[in-house]
Amino acid sequence: MVASLLMAPSRRRTARSAARPTRRPRAPRRVGARTTLRVPDDLAEAVARYAEEHRTSMNDALIRLAYDGAHRYDYEYTVEELAAERGAAINRLIDREIPPDAGDLTDEETTRAILGFRLGLYDEEIYGA
Amino acid sequence: MPDAWDTSVASQVHGRSRHAPLLAAHWRDGIPVALPAPTIQEIIRGLTSPAVHRPRVYPKLRWFGHLFRDPLTIVVPFNRGAAELSGHLLARMPHPPTRNHRRAGTRAQQRAAWALDVQIAACAFAGGYGVLTETVKDFGLLRDAIAELLPDATPLAVSDAQI
Image (cartoon, rainbow over all chains, first blue to last red; front, side, top):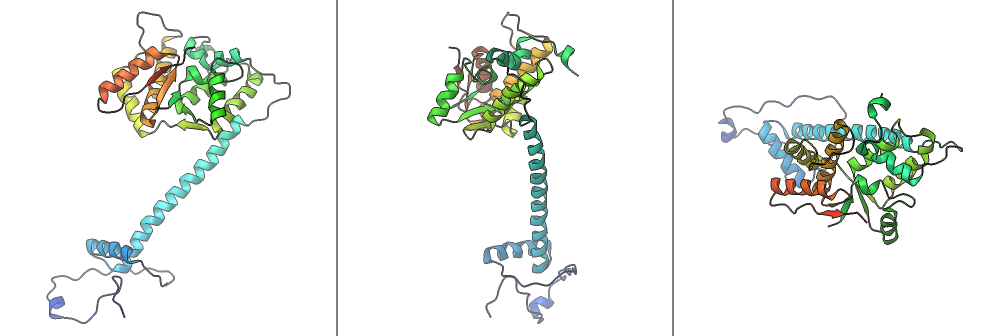
């Protein structure tokens, strides 16, 4: 068998391992379905670095990193969903039904309406809420 | 450098208005129309103001709505860079320049309009655009202020839309 970075180290005690000052703390036991997955080598290297840095097992490192990604995904999904819902509501402000007898502003009226507050054409203190 | 249109231009591109031929040329040649986000805010604000006759405004509101959603239209966002830059500019120049002329509107309206001009200039600058405007003197001051603040960056080009 070819050794993988994710494979658990041998449990055989050697002189070197016996000389280690402290043992790595046990990773938390989790509840959930067991699964087997192929971890790409480049990801396995990052997982190994994370495990070393946080003094935990490769499995635990993989799960923690997956949780990080899942939280980010959930965040983006929630924001995108809400943004899409609100965007559709904003669109409805423009797409409202036009009454058949609504008429239309002239070109000059349109420009005056848009630039009215810059040009001081109406007093917003009167018309404002 | 392509130009983003400020409100003085974008408010006059419908029907037979002064800058309608400019919009028509962009559409004909497939050239994007860049509108800074604050310009859109100002157009909608003006058209939906309680001072404007309500039912008659709907067709124009829809017309501009279609312009903003047109595939050729690029909304230049008020993003982080634009927000930071406009903060610097407003701190330096909180009041609109008067140049010894009385500006239209109440003082509150003048300051609101100036804040929008600052945001439009900041959007255009941060977005990689110049500004096409009828108020060249005001945007010229903003161009100079940006150049003073960021001497190493490519300056904001300000083009005169008066015809």
